Length: 202
Ligand code: GAR
Image (cartoon, rainbow, N blue to C red; front, top):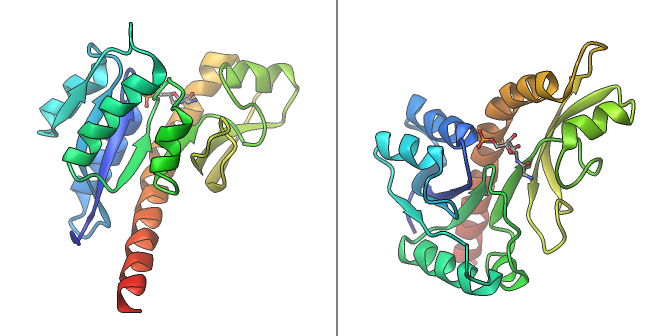
C-alpha cells in the first residue's frame, strides 16, 4: 500500500480548487494524499494547463459524442491504470454514471457551492440570494448515485450581504472552498488509509 493516498482530481474548467488541493500538498511534505492525475471531460480546460505547469500528469477526453457510460468507462480505465485510490471532483460539471459511482463507492468527494442539503444542482448563489437565505457557503460531500446528496464531511457558511449578487457571493465562497477542500481531503484520505491498515491487521 502506498504511503500517501493516490488522488485524482476531476475538473471541467478553471481549476482553482484543483490548484488549492495541489498547493496544500506542496506546502507540507507530511500530507496524507498526493495528486497523481488531473482528469477532464473538457480537453481545453484551463485547469489542465495549470496542472501540467505543476508537473502533474493529466488526462482528458471530450465527452461529446460518447454516451455517459462509455465515457465513464474510459475515465475509469485511466484512473485504474494510474493506481488512483481516491477521486476529488473539483468543478467537474458532468454527472457520473451509477456504474462508475458504484465502482468507486466511498472513494469520491465533491465540493459543492452551497450549504447542502440546500440548493443542489446549478446556480446555487443566485438561488440562495433569491430564497432570502442569511448564509451561503460550501460543502464537501461523499458522492453517491443521487446528485449532491451524499454524506457531508465538511461545510462552512458565508454571510450573504445586502449588496451581494451571485458573482460577489461566489467570489467570497470560492475563497472558503480553497481553504475547506484541502483540509477535508486531507482528513478523509487519512481516515481511509487508517481504515485500510486496520482491516489489514485483522
Ligand atoms: C467551484 O465553485 C465549485 O464549488 C463548483 O464549480 C466551481 C469550480 O471552480 N462546483 C459545482 O458547482 C459542482 N456542482 P474551479 O474550477 O475554479 O475549482
